[in-house]
Image (cartoon, rainbow, N blue to C red; front, top):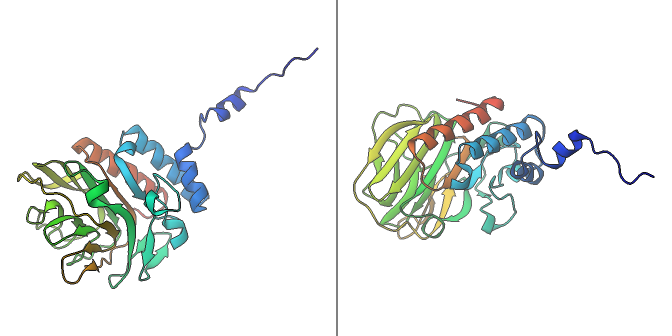
Length: 272
């Protein structure tokens, strides 16, 4: 009498997820509707971020794949169509292509629905932006400002990152091109750093415990209150091939983050 049947070791491997698609990657792939090389690149990205222990430090990540607003709105960490999941809502137009999202520099931006003063920790945070546009200028890639404190990132003639007191920017004046993966991070009240392609560009150790603005972070512009003009301002023209918001990162994590994102964009043929 047959009381059971043999189970293929390959079936066991698939059941346990061995050698298959990461579950978090699959959730994003399903929500965004991407396939083929883009799906493969997303899976590798998630696996690499987890291997580098960066995944848990990210609150929102936007891979900008699928060539449409519908596919690019999803948060890689939580691909649910709701404000609470930090999915993007685009405003003012912009260009969506296989190379990412380009706000246009006039009135285009995206609301992340992530509140810098509520959802981020003042002593441990980061913002990153992968720019495929070389032009520098007085614009803001993403962030918030309330007239006193700031949490934003800019790649301009003097690239800078601010988290807290608006006068305590991490600035440098050697930026001739905005191309690359930019990351600004704060690890304590006296430890702020900005990286380009995993390499440190500048630091700021001035003590700063000022709370972050209690407003939503915009991508492609800066969201401002108590300032004229209020709302979206300093619109960026830089094509975005990846962006993230989350906890503070070490030197090693900043480099590993760059390597993971660069591998991702290289797979898609849009690396710079």
